[in-house]
Image (cartoon, rainbow, N blue to C red; front, side):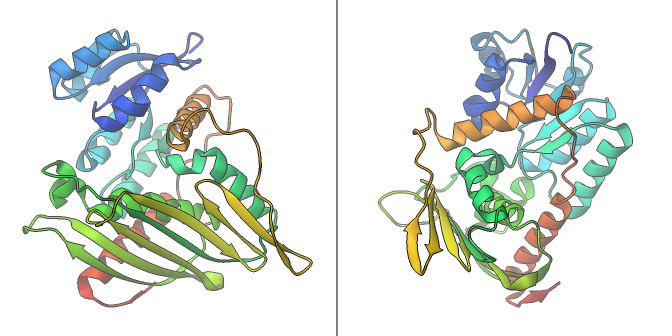
Length: 334
């Protein structure tokens, strides 16, 4: 890997085109050597645009490529687990878009395969790598906001996914909560140091059709230590523009994104202690993916410790419980 980690991107949809491909094409320490998509002309056109030497329409043919160290899996959700397992079987390091699999058992299978072959396996929870999230994490873990009491987050979108795989349960595995609530759930649990879940309740509104996914969902999760996590997501929001929020509340302060705003109680007064550094040159979204991919490359190169995402089993079990609670209309206790 002296000349850089040789990486292929599997799947050439929107997220790959916006983040993975352009970032990897210019990243030091990495070489983007191949793209793979079942739409051959699209894969070839993208390869030509970013000077990528190889393009494929079949992942098994891609994995036969000798000059390959790692793959980024950015295919539809139901293909993540089989594609991840195929790459790990070929002794390749993997960065997979979320979710790693459609079930907690699938997540366990992927983690076991990575452990068996001693390979890097990372899940693309890009919010963890945002610079504003990193700053908020420091406030929390330094005890400046006191004891964490709740996280409240949401994502309300004006436009629905339309007639795409995201709206079909068999391919997506879930609807708006899996697409937009799951990353918020992971971020909340990560900032809270993954407390034990106690009970969960949820309400979902499904789209039309037997195979349709949910278009709106609200989830309430109580964790050990009295920590409450509350999520509200929708693909059917009637409003002037999309809304996204993430707030943490502690006994001595609070913080919210985005932009980052932190307020602490000091001598009985509420004081704004938000960092006042220079504005970022790029959006938190692109910055987070750039940092995430750099971290993946650094792990593959042995420059930072490798840590398997074992916590994803717990996150996915909570996700499954949320869907069951919504389906049954009953609170579930863990």
